[in-house]
Image 1 (tube, one colour):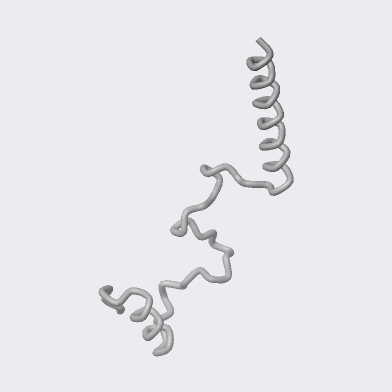
Image 2: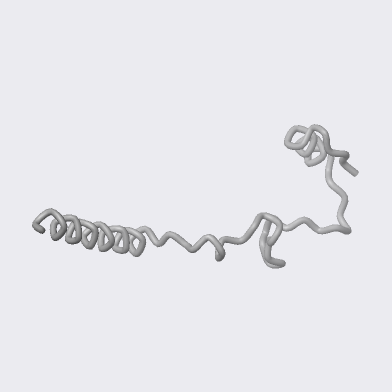
Length: 71
């Protein structure tokens, strides 16, 4: 009987600590994290399709994705 009560209390304390840690660290829910393809239109790193890549950008693209064809 005492062991069951102790386990129940420890589980409640653990749950409270996990909840407090999530609030303190502010871990976002997995479905709220945007995927890399979902870059907002106002994001500074969004590429413009009408502007071609520079030579430096092409070289970086080749280093990051060696098998991919760069236009």
